[in-house]
Amino acid sequence: MKLLCMTEVDFIPKEYQNHLEQGKVSWQSPSNIALVKYWGKYGEQLPKNASISFTLSNCHTNTTLGFEPKSSEGFEFAVFLDGKLAPNFAPKIQTFFERIERYMPFLKEYSFTIETSNSFPHSSGIASSASGMSALALCLMSVERMLCSSRSQEGGMSEAYFLQKATFLARLGSGSACRSIEGPVVVWGVHNEIDGSDDLFGTKFPFDLHNNFKNYQDTVLLVDQGEKQISSTVGHDLMYDHPYSESRFLQAEKNLSNLIPVLKEGNLAKFIEIVENEALSLHAMMLTSNPYFILMKPNTLEIINRIWKYRRETGSSVCFTLDAGANVHVLYPENEKETVLAYIKNELFAFCQDGQYICDQIGLGAKML
Ligand code: PMV
Image 1: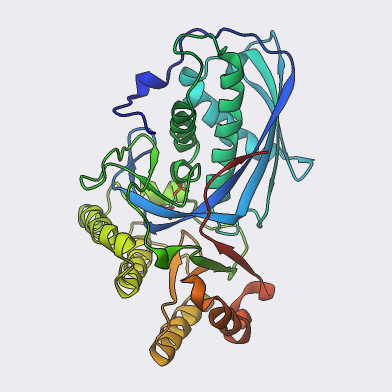
Image 2: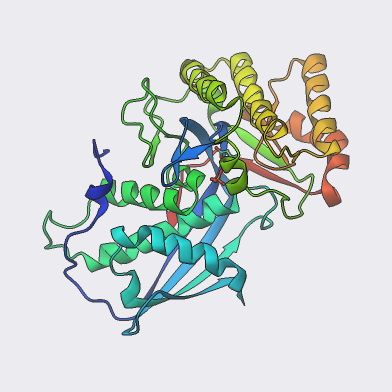
């Protein structure tokens, strides 16, 4: 059940009923891969066009949030990545806390320890910010749930409110993170053919997904695992004065309109057309911004060309998509798992950095640990 017509004000809690002593909460949150891309924002992390993604399963972040009451002023937190203090994450968390304080007034009353680890390489182009920020948002919601007693105003916090506020908060951490709370398919941003879609948070695709997409596979070929030269924040900002931005936003809206019946009816040929068009359009925006930049690498193009050749020669339904990076997400139906994986091992493997790739598939969303 989803709560309808929520506005920002609805996420500001009334008085908390409880006071907590020290404690810990843990969540595992997945990454997601966009089929129709979000690239360009307005206001406070709001999308210029609606996007839609597959929630992943194996690419995830585990986060444990420890909390302890404190009396000092300001935010207090320490971040650990894989057990090691990670002070380079502090500015991002500080910004996140500042953005969400209005909706989580308890933040300054506790000192936090954030222990996080990813199942995939950090900054590999796999959205670690999506899984990381959604996991942290969920941990904070678990704390807020404990602060609201079961005898509170509306009889405790409903599951629907919990999830909706978690995706709302995650969005304020990193836009696409709001699509990492639930699964298997999530829409973010207002689209007039998707009831309940909203710029403020992600919502589950409200139609039944065709069986062709059941356990849909995503093998992520790691072409370049270095830090990106251009962050997605800079990339989004370059859409403000971009000569093609308005037509790009219209194109995304149309691609999402066309994808709705495809996901309902299972037309894989159309799926391929839309998904690859979106990936290349996203990178076309990067090639034509001012300043321009290229995130694809020679091996990205080599893999794309080989996927096209393989498809021509075998009639396979394999296709690719890209995020804001050089890695290639190879998407294909479960019934092609054996053949496509064999092809990847025989042919595409050679173009991955250190022969690395990650086998993943569509997933159902975050889990409390
Ligand atoms: O959530 P951000 O700000 O990292 O932006 C993500 C942008 C893309 O991954 C390129 C597209 C998307 O919709 O996920």
